[in-house]
Length: 235
Image 1 (cartoon, rainbow, N blue to C red):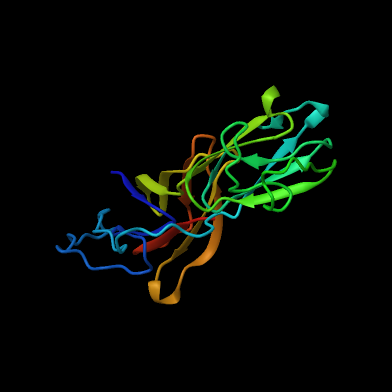
Image 2: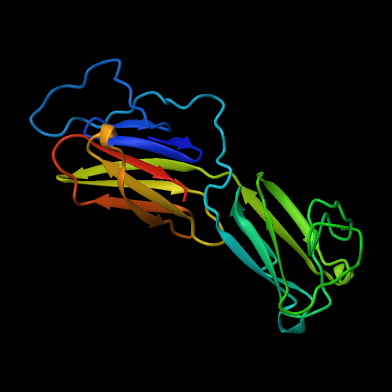
């Protein structure tokens, strides 16, 4: 079973509801009654269409060094983030700048030190920093206008955040949820909250960090008898 959602999703186990809103809906057909937990069952998605991306789902900041060891490079020269994350360039040496655009051609989307006068050749001094938050998915190239001809370029890949539940297993009284989220330069962390009663709200947020490929696994060993609702969200 594979369901993909942007931002967050809410699931319930026992009878298994999956939803992107804090709202469960009754199944079209009643689940069979038994003496243990109910069967795992998917219901229709309750998210309005189209899906809306969170403005800042993770609020993660990724550092890029400018001119480390007095070499004209960005390190790392390629980073993967999700929409809403920030890249922070840190000057390890003076005499460099950051200009957005294809190598050596300024497009003025962003530039150090303050997104002003992007066509200038102004540089920053050692230990300076420049931050830019990327709000839309896409590939963003940049370069140092002083050393572009020497190959001082970089790329920011901005990915769409998602959470996909790939499998759920039960070993009473525990539930294990396995899934996939966006694989980025720094391991993505999602938050799992749970409750036995939607009316009381979700409790006990637990951070779950994905592996380098974005895969994650969460086991709830404290689940009690009856339905259990889980909400998985960024961050």
